Amino acid sequence: MAELKENRIWIDGCFDFFHHGHANAILQAKQFGDELYIGLHTDEDIFTNKGPTVMNFKERSETILGNKWITELVPNAPYVTDPDWMNEHGCKYVVHGDDISTDANGNDCYGIVRDKGRLILVKRTGGVSTTDLINILLNRSNDHYLTINDDFITKYKDILKKFGTGEDGKTAYNGIYLIKNKTALETLQVPQFQEDQKYIYVKGSYDLFHPFHIKSLSQLKSKGFKIIIGVYEDAHEFTIMNVIQRSLSALQCKHVDSIIIGVTDDDSVITKKFQIEEIISIDDLTNEFAYLKDNGIQKRIQDNINLYKERQLKKLGKAEYEKILESQKAQS
Image (cartoon, rainbow, N blue to C red):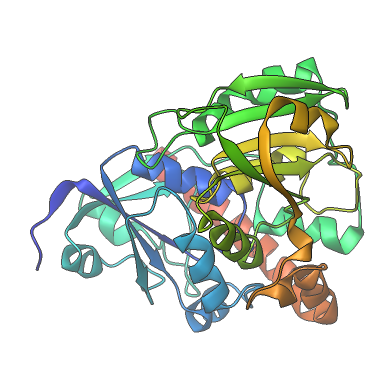
């Protein structure tokens, strides 16, 4: 057994259909220490305990490795959190959201570490889940779209700045900008590097931020310039995530230096503000995960719609059972 370190934190999960709720859990975990080890469950374990995954193990691994707060990825972590696995990697504590997660037998996945006093609970991110996103896709709704105005900035500025931290999860790093009311460029956070240096500007919807985006940004970053991404406004095209969800999912990526939220096809306001070396549409790029662009994930779900509908029904029943367990825990 490795020496248990107070500042080395463990977190595990499926991290399927990655969204900012996952990223916020990772960030909160990182803020409890200096090192963060992320255990990733296998496709087989997830299928047994939860249902079919949307993203396969390789895709989920690539997504986690693109996160800026991770120290090390631990593949094939058991679905029920095992103290022995934590011990092997020197992690004294595991962090999890304040909701109960159960395995196929109805047992609390964190019951063992909870009883040993090694579980740290954090607030679960409301308003987003894999289940919610699949429902939006199945129903083709756009009720979740947002307009970027003063109310938007007031509501989301804190979480944007929280996600705009560097690798330590505490110190501000990213430049954060917004296109307000479609025309005005507003600065929310100045980057912690020279703002007037040359950027590669990479625009796109960044819906369901996935390995194609991550690999593309990584390849561009290797050119030696800072990367500034432009996230299209809502309704530019149909997206399962709205503009704040897409922006937060992208902002957690280690290859992103600055972000402009709510861009359009007109680049003039951006080229006036920044020194842009090159303007690229991310969908024009290619790599080994190119099959995921052009709505590749959405098509995957639609092609197996009955399977995912069954998963949704199973998940609803499981959620009700987990609520009962939560109530019992609160009363005990």
